[in-house]
Amino acid sequence: MKILHCSDIHLGKRPFGTKEFSQKRYLDFFNAFEQSADRGIEKKVDVFLITGDLFDKKELSPDTLDRCEKVFLKLKNNNIQVLLIEGNHDNISGYDEINSWLGYLERKGYVRRGKYKASNEGYDFEKITIEDVNFYGVGYPGFAVDEVLEKLSENLDENEKNIVMVHTALGGSEFLPGLVNTDIIKKFKDKVIYMAGGHLHSFVSYPKDNPYFFIPGSTEFWNVLNEKNNSKGVIIFDTDTLEYEFSELSPRKRIEKEFIYEGDILQEFEEFTKALELTGEELVIVNVKLKDSGYINVNELEKILENSGALKGYIKLRYPNSIFDRNLGEEGYYSVRDVEKEIINQWEEFSDAEKVTAYLQKFKEYQEENDREKDFFELFDAMLEEEIGNENK
Image (tube, rainbow, N blue to C red):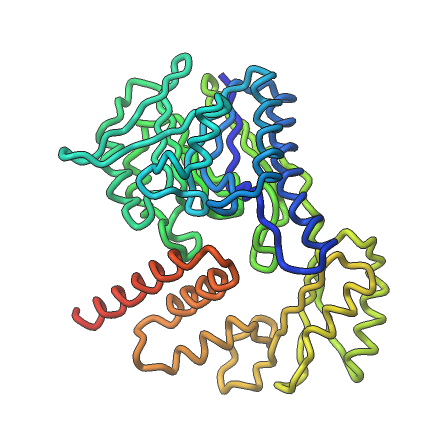
């Protein structure tokens, strides 16, 4: 049996910007989803797995739902079964069927959801069996992910073919709530043929040799500035041979360049952007290496980029090391994150500047999303608990 594994599709995301930019980016996420479905049809897969964040928000517009259903109908018409779980973006507390759009899609016959629930004995895990493979879905357990997955590992029969679907990633990859400890993943060795993860937006496989835990990454750029890898795609896995391949998709083109100026920054930047020969469809990130700590009008530089043909321009300022006494920056320059870390490092109230800086990046990301208030405060509470715990040791 062949499966296609994708995650973090984020249908309905409509980034802030001009009307043209916002609409094009809104459609990009549907294009990526349809590409994934077409790849599944092309590869003749039997099962299509979505490991969380099908939708970007819990509330959907009619257009988002309509476009989504059309893709699922295409899969259904090609006899491809769809199994999915909820992620942190489309998670409904307590599996509230009335307000769950994933529940709606299940009732319509497009998908089947992997679920579990707490019980007096611990947790009850539902099993979906297709041919000779058992599928277990645990959605997004959040900060309980280690506990839930450990209990599931104790319930699996190592003599059967098991696939686990969970919206999580390894805790060492990036600092986010809901990441699993590597030691927990190790408990699934020899108990699963495949562990389908999600949550982070770049491809990951673990362990390095003979991997069984996989994250395909998002199908489109959700966080244009901070996603490290330009490759987007899905994973094709054969449950008989246990072979896998990362099959690349074609997301919106993202370009990243460096700009160093000698004199008049605006004039030199206009010449620099014209040389890029942009078509009006690219997302363009420019790292500007500053000569000093003086004021730079980022909005003006982004406007020049867009007037030169970028669909959207993004400016990242790199500060010279001369601002600080120590030389920490790569190639003699600091990023904004470096500056924040250096400042936090001087605060005696916090024990780990690296962790607090990582928390700060997530706070900024959540603040930009109108419906991430719950995530914001959960993360804030976690940071406080950790800092207070460190003080009491």
